[in-house]
Image 1 (tube, rainbow, N blue to C red):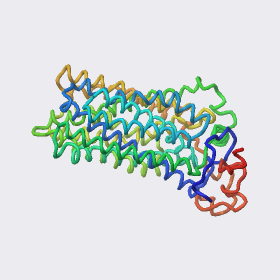
Image 2 (image 1 turned 180 degrees about the vertical axis):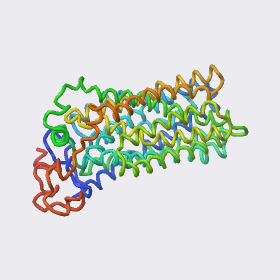
Image 3 (image 1 turned 60 degrees about the vertical axis):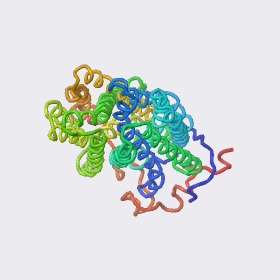
Image 4 (image 1 turned 90 degrees about the vertical axis):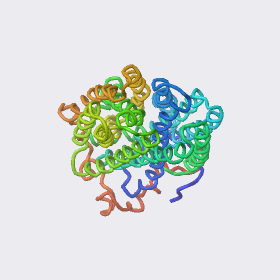
Length: 477
């Protein structure tokens, strides 16, 4: 099967059977999409590092520096609920990936003049465009990971991909502490170093957009998701209800808003927290501590993914989010290395929350999956709303540690979804009905494929099956 060739971006709404691919058949497309996770993890980790250094280099307050997070995450709902979701529903996943990469590249190139001028407003504008691109990527990538392949492995796939994203969040702070601000300190020279990194990022993502244009990857349509929902949740499942009546999905979107906003607020002011509560801690050293904390975040995603192989994801989600609340609350009163350890442990347990909310929130939505994922990803706008509140409290009380009370309160509201999905029958049933391949999904045509591995028979292969969306030029016309 050719992996690369020119073909139409338009998909339509027919059953492609891409949601029933075996594990082996999904390796290439999911590998390609996983690269995107690293890209936005890197951008997010770098943003957290720049936040603190902009306060010093550009002489701005904590509250004003939160404009970076506001610009970055404020663009997400415009993408996930607006243009990116429209492209996703009308043209499919591949077109949305290309759109997101193009916007990301444009924003990265705009970092160059912003760095030359030392303009905070310019940085915010460029960050908004980058956020638009990443919001578009996330609108498509998260549901794509969740629905491409056996449904019972949805949380596992998305958590592993998000673990790769977490590695990117480690690389960002490391690059900031060892490259941007280690030798040059907090100076305009450091900002000029930033521009070269973003120039390289821009060139890379535009190249990746070209790769996606020529790549042959399976598309999952609304018709596919409706069929899958019928197989896993019954012929009269939740997807038969109007979109506005998908109340559990909206609850997941609120949990995403509260959780993501709190996570972003903590990471954005982690360096401030470290320099205030730990004596003799510089901003550069604080960035190194942030890199360690983000490393724990990545480790938490890998370990959480492994645990989900044996324990239901909803239980792991509840346990991890509960620990987040406990450790974040402890960081408010503790000082020195103890307080730093508490906040670092908070990042470790934050790890599985975001992807698990997405996977559980879109479970059983069927034909509403793309719209629903847009709403849940739109909850990321919490990253634009909650950091300014934390920053304002930190400025008012002159204590970032005290301001950690804000994310604790929002985490508690997100906990309501974790409790509901484990103890409310209607939530729990929807989360647990994933469909065992042997019972719910149509059986593969070869014995090897019964275990989710190996190729199907020639007549039923993805490459030759007429209704799979690997289209030739005659189909396009």
